[in-house]
Length: 319
Length: 281
Image (cartoon, rainbow over all chains, first blue to last red; front, side, top):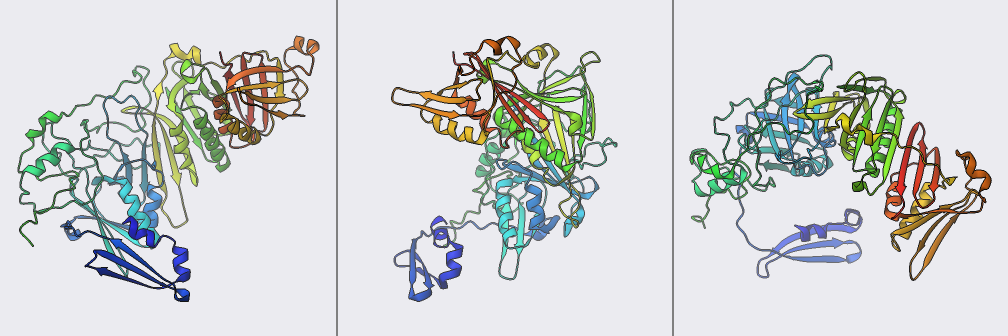
């Protein structure tokens, strides 16, 4: 893409001088030819070499997703603005009072003495053009990719629809206008891999608020030593994709191979906890550890989850 | 232990944000000391900091419309928290158009300073809430003695600083030549920054700076006002200090204890900052 983009690098120059642009394929020399017909008879020809390749067809259908969110891109851009630029993943969900919550997702490293700052943004329902999801549902996906597609949608002044399902199922980000429509499919962290994040909507400080469990789907009854991302990826390679149908998950940058310790869902915590003098400073909260060795517990029929960039139908049979 | 505070005034919020951003540039990790009247950002002179120490003080009344705290105990009505300065600075920077900002000490799995910001970006948008949970480490009482206000040493020379931006650009260029800087000043309003290497010596002279009245009474009579008092310091420490000053302070004084320490005493409106750089051994 870089070489293609470099042809169109200077928008200002293009607008001023280019009258016509012709794009054609020269099969014989394997070149994509981009010809810019400019003012004063100047013609710029760019020959970009290309390679034939198999393309992965993502199989998805936004209509199958039970939950939908729709808002102008600007609202979502404002929503992700408070998050640190380096943050990899974010959790999006519906909190109390039908507020849309975005929360930074941190992979908890049990040994890490330096805990990371957690940021949460809560937006009222009225900022959304459509909100079809119950309180408590949430998904976690790559923030970097989300920012990328948001900046595109914002520059074109479009609304963005987010179609999603249970954690682990791909989330579909759709934009549409008279000239184009785009679907960006991102993998989401499955419940196995993430520790259940609780989202809360900040309201009056006087009322102590109980935390909401995020997932409306029942907590999967698996041993705490279930596989992490790396193992589910490896298992997926071995087993046939079952009755779920093939769900290809293209381009995602959720990194596999991370250990996600599973913490017990904190339901009883009050938000405004005052510090007890007996609190021992600096001790990490009790956590259960995951082990890579227990990956095989995962039943083979279990559909592959988490980020697996190579889950595509075997197209060897076709031409 | 309890701590809750609220800022509703935009000017106060911006000033507090600037202070936290300055602290973030001066110290990666620092201690926040909360007492009934004041907030302090403290860096104690440990080996890990290269012997540099910092004491920043602000009166809570100047910033917060509401302020409640309850220390560790009635006799020790203070709270000492260690935190990563950048977290606080980043959290406050997201409060640009905030209606209100609340800070409170909470315990969410681990002790946190929770910064809660209410935003209203436009008349048509909903009211939005941004929450940042900044992890903190509660410092036990037995370590408090190392985090007290430093005693101001008796300076040999006390002088007002030139425009900090100018000083910074000079020091920045000097850093490329040598890490060893000599800072010297006299009671005649003259301050010099010197570097000496085998190949070259570079000195920048600042004149007519003015001297504040000296605190110690004995020194002034005997001293020849032209005589320079000097300290050899690590130039990077000076540069880090100068880089932290984005705005020119209301008042800036430099106190030199010959061959021992340089003490910078700044006042940014109502926030005082003291920064100590020890001499190179």
